[in-house]
Length: 184
Image (cartoon, rainbow, N blue to C red; front, side, top):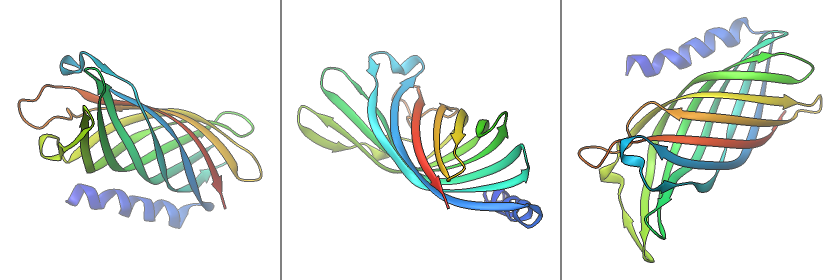
């Protein structure tokens, strides 16, 4: 719990010393699957993400961007089976501006499982009890922000934690996100 409180306290300290803070919203597509020993036969599931962002400018070329996102994840596999695994994700991205509006970003993410269902042969089953409730990931991405506040992003999220809880195989989430957002 102390570690979870450290990140918001750190963000408050950055905000106090920051030159400029903007808030925004973003949404987009997720292309998600699993990787690892237990991921054989898993294919991509297309879902979406939606949430709020804040960009804390530390200098002209460096910002911290915390986010609060709903993220649809999961995979397809074994015929028409679909696993719909939903998270509330909290990424904290370090953004490095490399040119006029262009940025590269990297940072950690913690995700909290909100729902997990498997649709098999038209029947929906709750699988939340078979998955870990917390997911850690490392994100890498790039973005472009217009002067108007409209922005576009591409991000790859590499899960660091095995998704199944117990002896149900070992695999980690992999998510490719395409986003459009607006900073106010």
